[in-house]
Length: 190
Image (tube, rainbow, N blue to C red):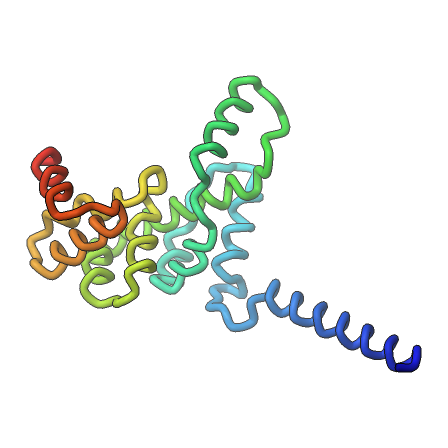
């Protein structure tokens, strides 16, 4: 292979990678409100000088349930990260590691909580109408980021049999519980 051909091939490959990276960063097909995607709104709020700031109800309502996938991608912080933040705050260090990610995670949790607040039947709707178990579990748990499965715990006592059944199944699946363990938990939680 000639040098020109190799240089052209490398240049084309590099250009394609830059283009793909640029397209992924801009999220061209993501829903937008006032020209911003959910991720861009999280960035905007995380940079606020008045942090912590609640996401605007207008923005939350505009995206509705379309915000769940990007919010889920902004995963809640693991316990070790929260512990590290508390240690850093205790030591009064100015440089808390990855402050932007911490703020975005907090905002995603707040956003999801507000979404469930303005749509009271949303969790029940997700449990009865969305077949994707992983998505439903993560969406219902998003406002309860401290403990996986916490969002389902209150739904196992719902008045709708379909909601109770699916919440119980997902709770068992999430905790790797058999029926006896689930019954024991149910009796202890009453």
